[in-house]
Length: 376
Image (cartoon, rainbow, N blue to C red; front, side, top):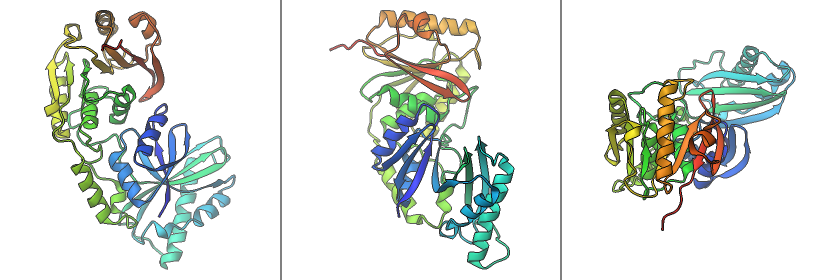
């Protein structure tokens, strides 16, 4: 059965998520700030959660309608065929947001939606009390300018929680963001990739998973695994296919280093958990000691920010090394995410070939992309 799904994303990553969804073979309905709407069946819910690297969640869209009064919201939600999704013992929680709407009280919206769903299910299952002891269904009511969108979360925990980061460090980048940085660089497995400030190893690990074609959701569970509308056999089949599609013989050139020994050990342990430690060369190293070791390499990095960790002196040292390195190695490419609005002129001495505004957590940053000169 065809269903309307919404992949939510960090602002700025909509185009990347859109390409991923299209690569899975699904029809895009529309792309908006922070979300991509597309059509897929029940198997598509499974494949989306297993394979999409950059979205935050996959939501099942139930309805969209105008609602300027609570009674209108109640009746519209009650009119949805919830019994086709939620069984008699289904556990349903309602969350919500409201922006520029007459129904501005989020708790009141949540209470209204909860009661409407409960009334519908109670009438259908002919019961005065719903046990709510079964599978989890997180319903979200989003009010925007008096228009309500009702969705159900198929993912459970956010998709950036791959399950491999058992040893995080201070100010880690989200796995979904790290994957996006790699994908936006258009790196391929025949090219050397270096992260000289690897922290917990998220960027090199995500690159390795991409290079080896490892589905990012293979190591975790999803809320919709307990749903009756998706047969258990579909999950088993899609997981089996995903394992079979791993390029276990793949050879990658990925190097990850950090000045802190304990941080690097954490990164190595995370890579082991992700099953990619064998294709990443980890080393304790100060960025000033970084050497090119070949032509046409690519650096992807999320350096420390003054707003988060690290002091200005350390940041200046990193910038100084990058400036020197790329002056001496013009065939290398740099992809760096930073809130420094003067990075182009101050460090690289030229405008980036491409730039993209992104939010790393709540911090506004820019992803600068400097392409190296081709060597034939």
